[in-house]
Length: 603
Figure 1 (tube, one colour):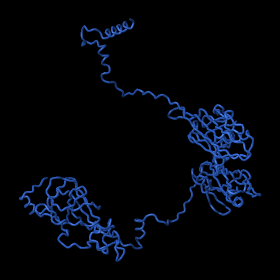
Figure 2: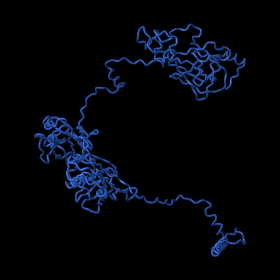
Figure 3: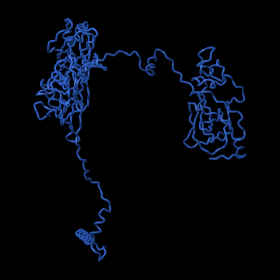
Figure 4: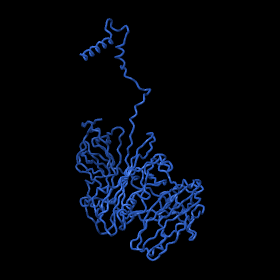
């Protein structure tokens, strides 16, 4: 729609005094509550035919003044609230200044504070605090859409950040400016309102939760100490941090068989020997296990810690719980056995403890329980122990493990199938002859007993010798190192495992194809003092899987040949009436060509 700015049209429009808005279909002005950054422009509103995008502005800062001097001939802007014809108030602000907190002083960025005596606060302050300026809401459209306005509401012409002039009408709707008045709060509705609008409370009503009727996998196991009438949880201390310090609060989970190792350090072992309950075997079985008050049975006798001279005797170094379960009937039997050692009283003494919890069903045979779990059935599962065989004894292949002070520990890391690993420690030995020193270091590197075979599959039976493959070994070449006053000892062991997937590609099974021990040695000088050697063990898994050829695609019923695929054959073998008479048969021509080629080759 285009409005012609002719005298006749202007006079008629002046008489009608209407508010024209040329708005595209489906587009409506929308209010906004965010500052636009638009500035007023003193230009006249001229007629136009351009249909622009509707925008809306609101002022969260100072209310913009209308620009005086707008032409009254032709299209004009009506500015009802413009202060151009009246004296400007020095403080055109709110009746209540919410940020005026310091009487008689100017509060920074409080644009309504009369103590600041600022005509234009924005020239001094970096911003105006919320509530310190009158908030004006405007609904705006492109200026080209407006020819003339006689709206009774205040209007402005703004220039937005893109240089486009916007015609804006001030929205004055009291319903949008105030919160709804809440109802009176009394004793009858206080709780209802607090529940409807409130959130979580710091103080919650204590609710006693009854334990479930039976244990589920992973649940902590409840214990009861009759001596103190106190309930607790069955604990399985675990190592935390770089030093592997014992964390006593680690609970044991129902049906979760696991082994943990941690270290304890003593500033004064002479006092801790008889006072620390972690060293006393009695503290690991002086309770009953709930739900059915199952007592803990002591499998072997364990003495109490005793300080004899400079030695703390009968210190607990290993705790093994064996728990029998019967489905939802819970725990039926709990037994415990201990490993004990003696510690020398000296500054900085450390102790490494091992805690093992094993679960088995009541119907499970003890022989199956002793055999141990599989590492796969049949193929190995990544992360499960690599099975080894020494004589008729099945065990896990292990790596070196260090204590808190870096020295070699009796406890060793299990080799996990498919997981490359490296570990090391320092071995301190009293001076002995070279052969005994070499023997001791070899045993430390590969562990006791020395692995002789490795299981091909994760469910290998020790009785079936065909299920195991012999470990190849290559020791150090002592003759290659020319040293007359030194001893050549092994310092590292690399365990190489070759494995592959076999079977169906949809259900592959991992098996071990071969294993090898590679030792590296170095000479050490003969000395009459204590010998310290740094040892390293490494395990690497090499995947030698040979994948089959890609399968060929199977024919499908929806396959189709090109429409002209058989055209050459139809032409060659056509005998229809439409064929040209007297023409030489294509087959005869082909035969003649072949004979010619053969004759050329024979010449």
